[in-house]
Length: 127
Ligand code: AMP
Image (cartoon, rainbow, N blue to C red; front, top):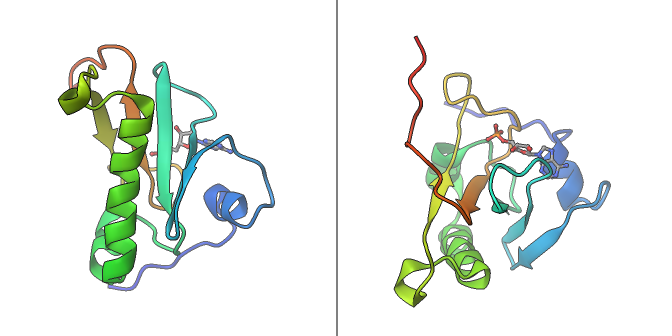
């Protein structure tokens, strides 16, 4: 399976500096910024800098260095936000939507970090 990466997606434009973002964290292979339409007091998106459409694409195609750095970036952002339960924080939820059924709007891998309030049930079932 080959993923067709659309380099005109909005996060690709953020990575190229064509549109601004509210940066929270940056590393060699990852960038984190505030979601433009926050669903919680903390709503941060963490993206890899490489051209990966969704999580499974990244997990299969990224280099070990990218996977390590991206995973560490998510941990660093949680620590920075003060939401890590191990450090006395109140916790958070990670969400990574993919494709049509996952209702992914932006076709560049991003993990949502939602925190700062009770995030509620994992999935609201619709008929
Ligand atoms: P998803 O449905 O998982 O693809 O989520 C895409 C997210 O990107 C949504 O929560 C949007 O609010 C967010 N978003 C879209 N454009 C921007 C932007 N320019 N800066 C920050 N977040 C954005």
